[in-house]
Amino acid sequence: MLYRLCTNTNASRLNIRLGLIDGTHADIKLDQYEWLAEEDDASSPPAGVACYLLKRSADTSELAADMRLFRSGGKMPDPKKIPDFWSTSNLPTVSEAFKNLMEEIDPGVHQFFPINLIIDKTNEPVDHTRFYHFICGRLVDVPVHDQPCDRSTHDTRSIDEGELHRWRTIQERPDIQTYLDQLPIWRFRDLGRFVYFINKESLDITHERGLKGFKESSGHVNRDVQHVRY
Image (tube, helix red, strand yellow):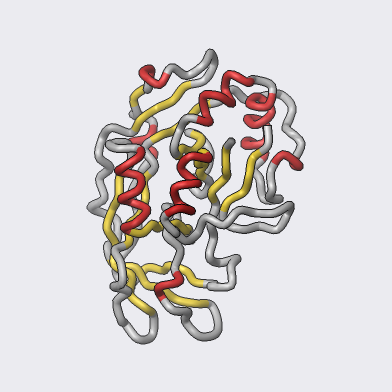
């Protein structure tokens, strides 16, 4: 079973966001690394599917280490409520607990760039745990079907057309389903960096460890994690 990870705190009750501090910018130029990723033949992808691993360390020298944490309106929530996986910028923001989990179950695949969250207005640091920008090191290419899949296969309404056409291919190929089910976490190679996929084994571990940001959706009630039906 696969689950779509697209935790967005803008749309949650937390309503928190990340912003740049004056004089900094967050340009990581990941494209130049992603298209140099090496094919992962060892994982034995099925015919027509390619899996790539980002083995070169991304140059993060232009990526801001200090990020401003703010809320659009109302009182800033307790920082301890911040999810262990969330996204309001080009890269997901993850906690030390998520980093440790990935390095345990998917070692040597992903990259983590440490960041400091500074609460807007008070300038206080969020220091109950360490946070990182998450650079997913596993990119998957799936053939694009000439027809899109039915949107009812996803517990979400915000799906890119390119993603729908790829899921139609996956629906018709049980061998691709079996392959994707064994990948701990990945994203489509040529689609946006806001959407990631996690398998059931990995999701179960996040629940066992009490990680935040992994509540499952029900129907079209958008939560953190949305089940993808084949």
